Image 1 (cartoon, protein in one colour):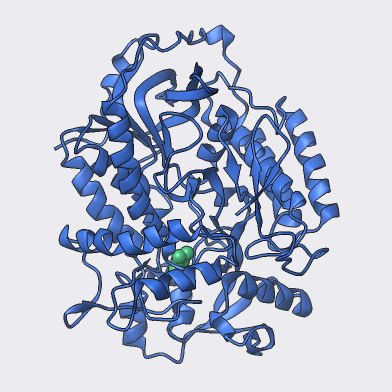
Image 2: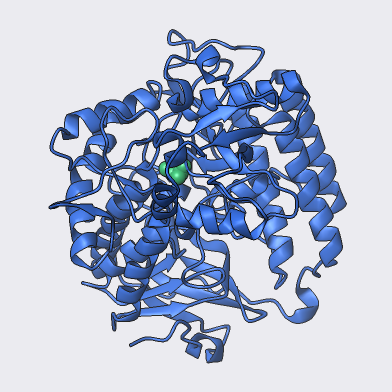
Length: 555
Ligand code: SIN
């Protein structure tokens, strides 16, 4: 069995680098599943920012949406996904995800995922905007169960080497001419591994670096989610699409001293009610589906109630459910809140919205190919178009499993038909040539400044003036650290904090820029100055690259 870290890379000469067939960056469900698929036909190196298990996947509570219930069909799941996506989904990609999701989930069960069962079928739960009960789950710790199963399999696979605490800074690329055009090719990454700058060469590279919730002060995401893959891809010349669409989850815990923590939508799916500080149930005022309205509607409603009552949160009430049901269905939420003195059997849960999921990302087709040869992307960092303007609950783990496998298979096939011929020799700078690191407190302050301006102006509600303000703020913040938010420079440093800060600055700029271009409201993007969805002018998508002004393209 492999150990988690193969440190022989550290012993390799930084100049000669480390070679592999398929390099995977990121160890959430998408990266792990890609590694397993690729390893059937290639040697794989999987690198991860901290530990193998730490990712957004680990914290996923709700479950995996899959059309396996007796009254369900692929068509119904496709319809619900596209309707949540508000007209911007790529229907072909959605059909792929939903239909291939069935064998992917079946396989996970065969591999030992211990999801909840009822008779001969998994126990399906309900979440917002699903027309059927179709969410398979393990209590409220589905992400942990999925992670455990996949990690175990990865560690048992000979052809996968794992390198943890390896921070990928930038993609290695060179321009390659074909008869028709010059295309950038990716052949690995530069990374910080144990305070050294190293080059990891690969015939094919898969980015599966997850999300960016930590660009916002309130979020359901863990600390690692600083948008690193989005930034590195954009700097390398990838097309970034739908970057204005950030999903805010309506209910993250708001409790003194408690960390960022998700209160699953399944709590509302099982009958949880939202009430304001005055004890009034309010969701009926905002949407006919009440608590199970789309996430953007519930988040805006909560924000409005907070504004109307002048109180910094609302409450979620599940106390009417039997205590044994709550304990069995929501053990993680019960345990976590108990640690902070709250018993959800008898107490109301203080909640408010937080950044949860990025619908946009690196533009890929359903084969997970990007516009860089040899570079594939899957999971939250990628945008195949399966989510459109708003993701349906519990479709993200499904996406990771389906497109993880596709990325792994396609990258392995690419690696088999390409040789890595003498990549351009890049000098690893000497210590004196490196960009010096920054003081830790200063980095915290700069990250907080980025988060503050995004929350204020590029959050649940935006308008032109606020977005312009944030673009100015980001430039000013950039001056503080001597970096420009829209300049795709490569950092030569071993300071992970500095890299994260630059990544956050780049990605904040991308989101803000795209949000300014889209002059309508749709799904996760709500413009108070353009409050209506405009299907005449805006059934379109926005692509941002490092070279050009944003391109607005038809579906
Ligand atoms: C939740 O449990 O509410 C989150 C699930 C998801 O985002 O799909």
